[in-house]
Length: 81
Image 1 (spheres, rainbow, N blue to C red):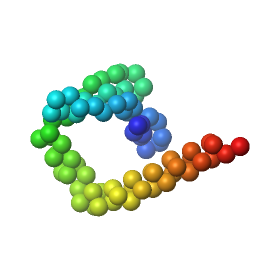
Image 2 (image 1 turned 60 degrees about the vertical axis):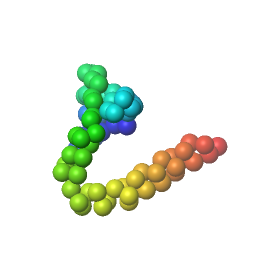
Image 3 (image 1 turned 90 degrees about the vertical axis):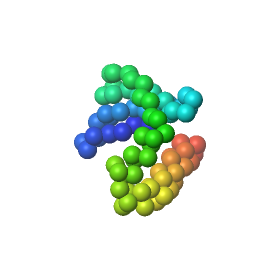
């Protein structure tokens, strides 16, 4: 999964999110050069509601649905002869 700047440049490439004990471990590459391992503890995960806000949390189901549809359409187009 990649996160981009407003002008479309990749800033963060998340290569994996895994469970390690009670934490999540995210392996990321920052600006295409610096690899990092980021640990998220359960108590920190609740901080996401402060960062996202109610409007964004309410938008997430639609956002995920649109992403799923776009990926599905891309796979159909790639499989077409």
